Length: 108
Image (cartoon, rainbow, N blue to C red):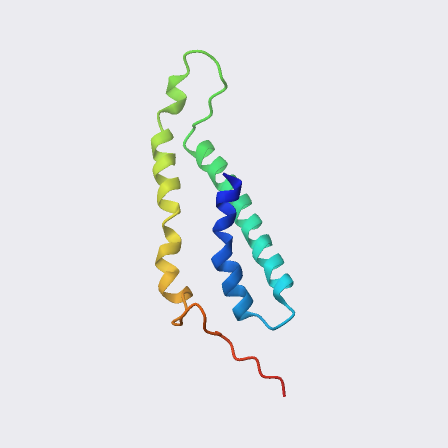
């Protein structure tokens, strides 16, 4: 599963290599990886907060089905949260072909 998720990085890495100055590719990759880690941690904490907010806190004891009454609300909010970046796509995708240079690097 982790290997499949890594394939999602390839378009971003290729795009970053076209956007950054020559010799800065590793720095940009590190910034991208750090941003991914930050986003993952924010999503974990947000999920835990939503579970606590909607009182979905099972302890593993018998007959605690009531703890899962609001789980569907948390699942809907979590599913819809993944759609938020779609609203920003028109602003984030450049109007260029994949093999074009996006930034003209001229050193005077």
